[in-house]
Image (cartoon, rainbow, N blue to C red; front, side, top):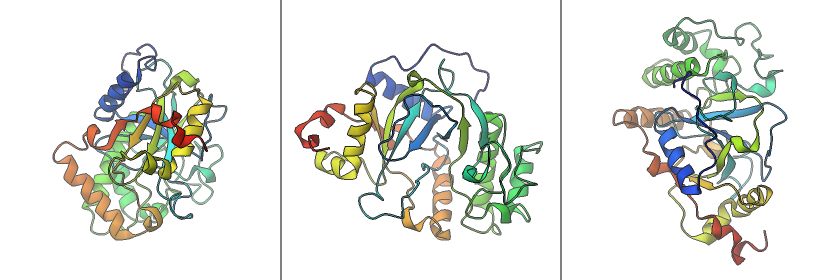
Length: 296
């Protein structure tokens, strides 16, 4: 990612289709920041720091799943969130620190700080290169500090350095014959500062499996949550469907499943990574104003 690229004017002013094309282009280049939200909540303007994730074509296509795995169908089958403006837009939130994986920031106060469990090694990263970072967390004692969770991860002040280290670390895990799986969750965690509502490109609805065309199925997989979010922003934001996600659900701690996601990442990246059109598309928002959703 280019950390010093020229700042463009607000990018969230186009029509819904234009925003979709911007999302796809960003996903296939620098990446796009998103943040999963709880239930039907919707932050019109962040008052506290927000935990976000960068989705990019060369990363596993997964996000923070929250309580998924604790509840039954259909509540274990979908997730909602917000999509920020692409990097370089005037109201894109500023990254205050970044972890290559979920940094378990609920144990860090403030979030860009050390964890209670590993107070010595989980502060600001001091590695000179992405290779040094990778070597430390793939071998003892660093590897023990990130097994299943990212409690022992250090954090980067610079987002581009963190993403470079993320690529090296994920490739290193995939190639390792000694690293104990599962490793930390396979998405990064970016702590961002305050942002206005026009810092948002849209909202997302995420699930595993292919795109869903049947309106009744869309409703079953969280459609009423989508409606509640849209009502809070007066239907002014588009809805982006994220499909075919790496979605471990109740099996998130399965070592073979974890390795499978890494192997899939390596295989895709040999042919250029994900194509945005295979995993994201614009949803026809008029569906959510139909009589099907009158009881939401």
